[in-house]
Length: 238
Image (cartoon, rainbow, N blue to C red; front, side, top):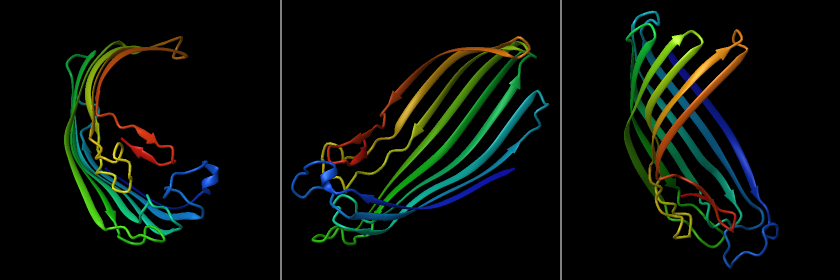
């Protein structure tokens, strides 16, 4: 079967006058009557082929396409750190999974996903302020990854099961923030990665009216991306 989703939104924002934020440094990043209007589009498609669920050995394969697009249609007022841009993020992936019932109580599951993320930040090179023009650029970054997942499940009864799992995940980075003048926060964002291990149990009592779940997990997280807000009101991912 296939899944498809399409979303399109128009947004318009207005930046308050400097007095709302207090005094700004000379050539500050915000000014009165600064307005921007943009278009946001999201597309997602997935195709999956799977075996019947009533078999001892089950499998599934598929692929997906996802794209996010942002375009700044119009910008008025002096706003030096927000040039007209066209940003996009494209994700292409192929995935597969197998499940095998070793016994009636024990099940092994193995999953894998290979994906490619392409991030693009494009500046149109139009007027950035009343006295300056921005230079056009077209920065791109590509991230390839293979993300496995393994699960061992033991169900001694219909109302009690134990499990152990291991999985890997990621979040793509992005090119350097050219419109951000702060050298401490305008560098390229590295790809975020994590490796997770978890064990736990799930149970039900009183004919399903009471549930008791316990779990313990460990996550090895590297290159964590954090949203950083500066005193000028500018927000940047670092």
